[in-house]
Length: 176
Image 1 (cartoon, one colour):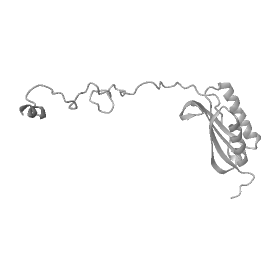
Image 2 (spheres, helix red, strand yellow):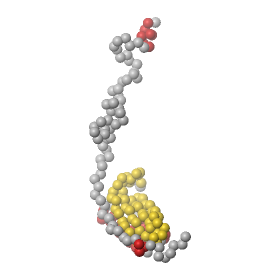
Image 3 (cartoon, one colour):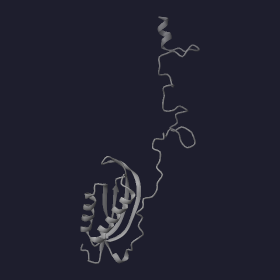
Image 4 (cartoon, helix red, strand yellow):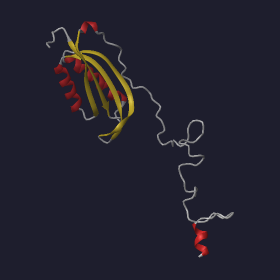
């Protein structure tokens, strides 16, 4: 399949910046990546800064990062340069580029407004224990017992419970 000179491919790249990078430095880096697209003959569509979020797993000794989503048009050589620029920077934890559309007319796609400032997100308290649901009831049908069963004795011990008659193995052995 040959691609005409008038058509470009649509790509999206998601990359993660280390969380300790200042917002101003992150915005400068995002603008630099926008410049890479334009310098290599591509067309920038939109950059969205998703802010600092927790990673699914630890990467390069980091548990959080600033996620950035970038959509752009370009030829395949543009992606190689974009990925190379990301790989060189030590503040980039992860990166992923995906081809969205193999043949797009650049005149048909208009750039959208960028969101480069990270959103202010209130972080959840991860230390909160999840023993009870929102109504104050217990999870899992423990019948009023917490997950700690130290006070629950049941029939698991060998001590007689006392009370009326009982029967069982201890009485039969005592008659002999």
